[in-house]
Image (cartoon, rainbow, N blue to C red; front, side, top):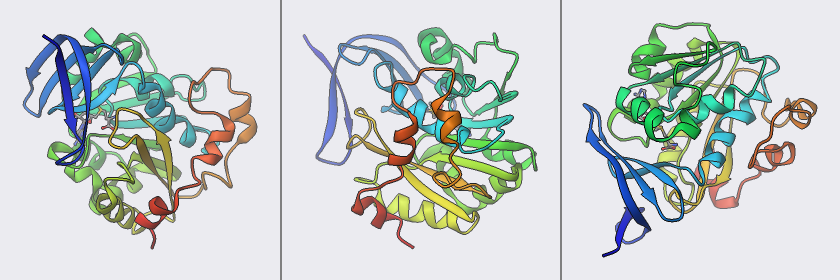
Length: 281
Ligand code: SAM
């Protein structure tokens, strides 16, 4: 008998994948965590039944939530990731030699533990082996309150605005992020699907614009996310992601990336009209 996993993207549309094995299934105090082996996308992590990462296409998301900010900020020394318990964002941040410390604040320790156990290609830098990485198991909302004027870049690598992540899409949280950033700091947050989540984007970008002087959206193609068109919010106290982009540093980067590149950095901020309309002021 064939085993299929389906994620519903709306009441009548979804994605379905053939599963060969369930590697882990358990419930933390926050969510249901499943890690399965798929026939075509490698291992896949699900939280409350929703696709978080797959081995085959995670490179897109983790390239694009990290490198645009790290090649726009001229000297990103201290970086905070809120969420990101699979470790993929930290892996990409560590490729930047100028980063002296990357802090991961993930609310669910089970996600970290099972990512280290089953997804080593993503969790390779959060297994305790890298002295430039510090882990905190805590609510990002609590953590951020205790840190002011500390980070050059803050990445919000969270689940969708449901459950523990609801508060990570609100204006109050963005004000706390603004305070935790240094005077020229940059924040990037995953900002859902322009095709399915127009209302979430409208509210999220309005909240960001109430706090940050520079707010832009950029896009990426992630086949296992709803509609395949995904987006990120770039919110900045000073630098603009296109005008202040350090193209030379990005071109001469000493590491390979399978999705991000110095041309795509610029192209990603050119949006389809409907996506631009979602966040029109
Ligand atoms: N790439 C995925 C996406 O775009 O949906 C995100 C993956 S990562 C696994 C999401 C993480 O955010 C989860 O591990 C979840 O536990 C964490 N998270 C949710 N709310 C949080 C909060 N308030 N503080 C810290 N981590 C949180």
